[in-house]
Amino acid sequence: MAVGITQTANPAGVGTSGNVATYSGVSVGTASADRVIAVLIGIEEAVTISGVTIGGVAMQLASQSYFTEMGAGIFWAPFPTGTTADVAVTLSGPADSSQNHIAVYALTDAAFPPQTVGSDSSSDMDTTDPLTTGSVTIPTNGGFIAIAAGARAPDAKTWANATGDIDASVGEHRFTTATRTTAGTVTITCTGGFNGEDGVLAFMIVSSQQMPTVVMSPLMPT
Image (cartoon, rainbow, N blue to C red):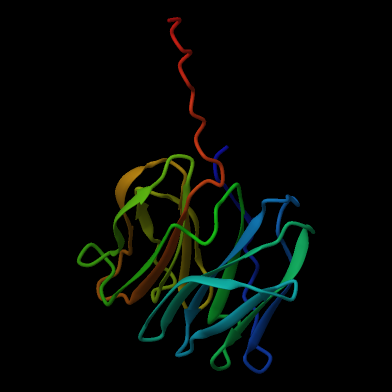
């Protein structure tokens, strides 16, 4: 078996009621006994993420990063049943629909907690100082998932050594995600195209729940 990573929802941003942004009825994909849901969050506002629930279930923090007004975070929870759920993101203060955004991913055959988590930030995320994971290892049958937020909403972002998935202007910031299920030791980067752009990155790496099959050689006759 190998880790599967599928984007299930990329809803429009919603404003907070109080400090809570509730994304109602988002798709979480096909129900599965081994399904874990990851919620990736991007922010451009001077707030932090206090907590996330899905279907009323508290999610665990995998990774987060903050720099100036930029924020990015990944939260996860086992969620084996249902095809839709409400996702509630509690922030340290209010934010409007242009200042926070989520994407939802379903992971299967993934061992949790994550094997590796990390983050990065930059005040100049073009080729001068792109967002980076540093050298990381994706294990055989494992997977990688990341969220980056850049202050320049109109400007596309480019991923290296991971497959870019979402790359969208979501109001006041650029929201971009990437995944990888190819094993290897690599440095994954996210690069903007505008000089002096602030940006943040959060990522996690998961291994497979299944141990590799070991094939035993038959015993030689004595």
